[in-house]
Image 1 (cartoon, one colour):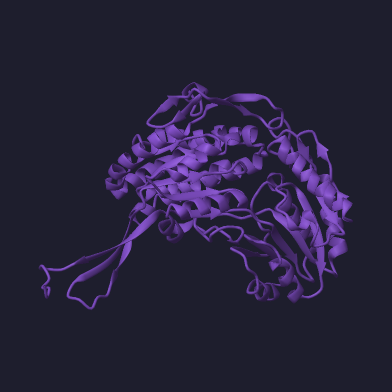
Image 2 (cartoon, rainbow, N blue to C red; image 1 turned 30 degrees about the vertical axis):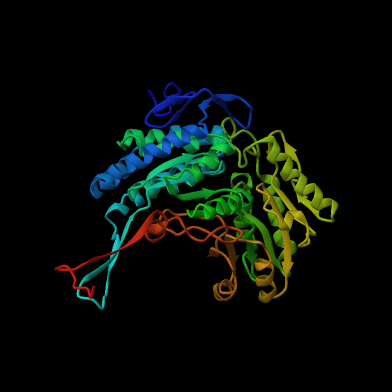
Length: 484
C-alpha cells in the first residue's frame, strides 16, 4: 500500500484516526476536470469535537521529552524524502503544478521538517535580572491548540510551515486545507505524521467550507490561528480573532515589484522577471506583479520578456513537458483574463499572451500600463507581467511603495544603488539581484501593510514567537516575608 492509497483516506477526514464523513467532495484535476478521488468534509460539530480532543492530547504531547518530539519531526522529514515522487505526482495533478515546482515544494517540506526538528531543544527562554532576592525567568510554553488554515497554491508547504513548528514546540493542531487541494495540503501531512509516530489526537485534518473555517477560529480551545490566503479573508479572520482575544498570524496577498536598475544585464533581468511572474502560473503570493524598469532599458527589457513569454509552453503538466500548467479553476481563470481585458480597454497593450488556452492562461506581458489600471493595482494571481518605466531611484522607491501590499521586492543591477533603494522600501522581504519568489525553512517569512502581520514563519526565533506563550517565573529559596 502506498502512503496516499485512497483506501485509507477516501471519503474521510482525520480526527483521532480516519473518520467516515456523511459529506464528501470530489478531488478534481484542474487541467482535465478528471476526478482523482474523494475527500470527506468535516462539519463545525466535528471541529468542536476535534478541538476538545486536541486540547486533551496536547497536554501529554507537550510533556513528551524534547528528543522524542524531535524524533517525530526527523522521521517526518525522512518519510517526505522516501515518498517524494508520490507526493510530487499529487502536486502536479491536484494543484496543477509543473514538475519542477512540485519538486521544489516537496523539497521545502523535507527541509521544513528537519529544520523544525531542532525546535524542541532550542533555548526556550531567558534568565532575567531582579531587584528581589530570587531567580527571575521568562520561559516559553506551548500556546496549546493551533488552527492552521492553508491555501491551494503551494498547498503542502504553506500548511506544513505552520503545522511542523507548532507540533515541534508541543502544540496540537487543527488543519483546514483549501478544499481544492485537500490531498496535497492535508491528507499528505496527516499520513506523514501518522506514519512518523505522532500520538493520536495531536493533529486533526478538517477539510470543509467557510463554516468549518469559522469553527476552527472560534473553538474555545484554540489559542493561535495561522492563516495564509487572501487579504479580504485575512482581515475577517483577524477581526474575528481580535474579538475573541486570540493571536492571529496572517500571511496575505502581494503585488510584488521587480526593479530593474540602469546598467543591469537585460537578458538576465528578463530571465529573472519571467521566472518571478510565471512560476506556477503566477499563483504565488510572492509573484512578480509589477515590473519597474529604468527608462534607458524598458524597451529592450520588454522585448526580451515578451520573447520569453511567447516561448513558454502551456498545458497539462501531468502529460506534457510544459512551463505553465492550469489555473486552479474556471472562476480564477476568468478573473485573470478579466483583469487583462479591462486594462487593455483602459489603454494597455499586449506584448505577449493575453489569452486563455483551455484551462491555462498564456504568459502575458502588458505595456503602456498606468498606475490606475487593474493589472497594476490588483493582485492578479495569474501569469501577467505589467511593465512601467522610471527615471530616478527616488521615483522607483515611490512607485514600489505606492501599493497597498508589502510582501516581496526584487532589485536587479548595481548593488550599491540597490542597497540604497532597499533602505527606502516598505516590504517584508527585499532580494537584491534576485526576483521576488524565494523561501527557505530557516528564513523569516511575512509581509507588511495589506500583506499581513509581519514575519511569523521560518527560523527558530519567528517560530518560537509564533507558537508559544511567554510565562514569567520566579523562584525564592524560602517563602518571602510580607508586611501583612
